[in-house]
Length: 162
Image (cartoon, rainbow, N blue to C red):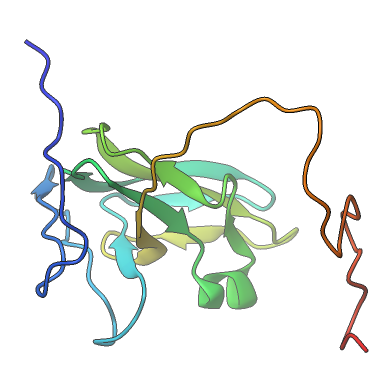
């Protein structure tokens, strides 16, 4: 029998409770470093080495019970990127509300010379929760006009705009 996640109320006074299943003895509950941080730190649940210019899929040992109406994104940690060149290959990584498997993060070591060691418990990524909006797409032959129009990559230039 197929079951769907429960609907959520995003405007409640206490926020939303997301069940988190710890899948391994080394798994840690995601947590915010500071009370008002937007994202929760994800910790590695396994040890490994990412060679220079290499990538690895790192398990966090957690699975999420996201309710309908809520998704999560895995995002890089700025300190890892700045100090070690560690980024997330598919950033942001999307976790859909129906997914119940382990949250895994694809890390890339952009350093050309030094390997990067991941230890159990290391903060390797951030987890950001986002409310979803139901969208109906409609085919059309014409879109409304905007100031930007079809201007794409680099259209706003560098530095301040006049």
